Image 1 (cartoon, rainbow over the protein chains, first blue to last red):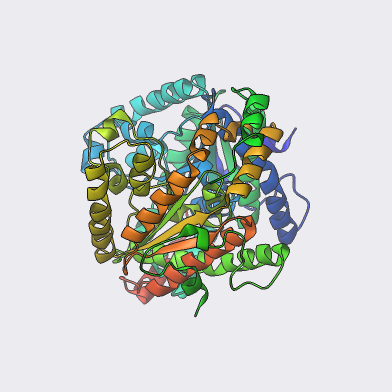
Image 2: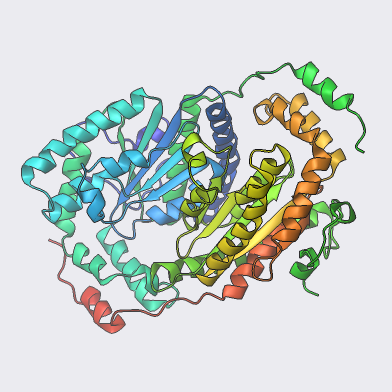
Length: 281
Length: 281
């Protein structure tokens, strides 16, 4: 069983209370070792991403989409900063989905998602995603039960099309414990450099923790497809969370196995143009 | 004279042949020292950028726009990767401007530029920019002489509005020598992992080097305003080019002096909500 397999959600009913939040699966070292391992991973990620980017600039149509979901403080932003931040920002397209605007609400829930999909050669990153439309939308009853029900199928169809068109979809649920969320929210209240990250609404949502857990469990079960499976990432240890998503990203890129494109011009002819050029006047 | 002053283009006529391409102004160390200095700068940049981002998420309306121009191989992409790559990708918005599309050509040249401006709190990066519309457009006669003439003024007005609305504009001309461009183009032809970066059209443009130099000189002179001055970055040494742009970015952020926003909620009240909460059932 490789690293990625261990994080993958098996098919069937999901009970998140049975999934560890503080484990460091498949990693033996300390926090400091974990950070070193992530930095080392950076070279692999950068190389693979550049190959994918090169492919996308020529004949390719393939891309990667990393979907990050998780309760408040689970570290979606941290993963973007520390893991996604390892690769060339030119090759990355990050979208943070907030509460939908009036304009977005006037369309199907997937409308704004489609507009944010990565172009060929890019690594797209969704900080929250279409899954909010079956998570907060379910808990807060922002849509009817029938509409929520419809959405699970719509998401599966959408992701199937996405995969068929050449995008590898890497779905990560950053799984933080109720206790650690409390610590992290308190830390934001104790540190003036973190006030801006705090919103009293975060505690309102926390009070609905069991409802969110259930909404996650249903969503994970219903959308855990063979072609776009879910991964549950223990997120109480920030360093492990960052490393594990890095593994998944590397795995996705290695699966694509992008190759440097061939020259579509005559190399010797072009070299001769440079070598034989007239001096600058 | 601080670091930034040394790179700043003084007002008046511009003769690029008088500007060094291989200097390392204000830096005494080796290439390896330069790389270390850039990595160290990363912590400052990350801190300042996060403050700006925090400000943008609350009451702020300020942002930074880094404009990168330069001949092919001058290293616009390298600066994005190595310098911009030091800061949190969530706080950055990068736009690479290619030849305008039909749709873009049907609008004023600044139409696509305005759409790419950074929102409050962000660092926008233009890899090529509205300056192409007075550079290649002039050399290749893609617009009439009158239209090109009009554009210098339009650019100055546009940038003045931009600055007035809270954006610091950092304009960098990456100044590479004719010889080093040749070396870099040849290197792309000698390395199969770099073929994708090569385009025979790059040599066509190189053959017009004196015309481009003149177009740059005119554009720099005409748009070198007090509120949005140009900087000429010696770009033959990649490490120095990356470091120098890092200095300019830090200087711009320090000039804004962004502050952590105050809490807009009652801290003790929120803390009590967490401390006194009912246990999870």
